[in-house]
Image (cartoon, rainbow, N blue to C red; front, side, top):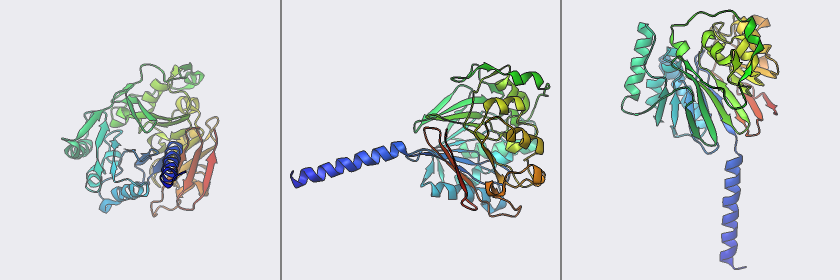
Length: 339
């Protein structure tokens, strides 16, 4: 074989190995600690990204800096999408500071603010000023955002819910009979953009801060969502969300709660998730002071056990076969969950 052919063969072999490696690369999720808000960075195998929410404003850019650190760790120079679940300050407030630090290609949200509150109007106006003139997608139930062999399907938005079940879902839910009638919620929480993220056999559910009345529309009388592998505990683990009829019907294998030390992690919501059939483990971003010794997970699975903390994160790598590996960046503790 000539030298040129040998070099060509090595080059083609290298390209084939690189392509195979890219295809085999996992999905990465960074649960950034924004002290009881939400900021979840999702990165595909070759670097396409979606950030769900941006944490709080102020604090000398604390939350924007933590998100930026996660983005740099993931090798990102920009964010392809920033999805804003709703317009409360702990979800949308960080947008102006973040946009000053990293380019954002497109925003996704549910449309106009619907809450009659001066604070929420202020936070929406600050967000609107940043994304005005840029690319903006208005999410509606049933919409799909597809990239990196990953499908992000909208299951709730602006108070509307899926009209038909997701694939392999729609079974009658016997848990509905024991649920009370929940009140209407006039806040932005009920308008949350909720998404089901599918990557091969892996399914991840994030409903933002959706409250119980809307949860019941997804779970009853039939379970429109089916089962999930990874559940981002709704509303940081507040009592107003996480109805038993929904949480136990989706049967998560792993749950991650983005609570704060003194925000959410409510004992009854924690217990509902903890008792969900098939749950292997729940992980928390903070030790919940309200939860006390009976309603917190083991210390190794809490990223920030102290109220005054360094803002450690929880990181997940997920394979297309449904394997989930969770790492606590505070102590390096890792567990792997096979499907």
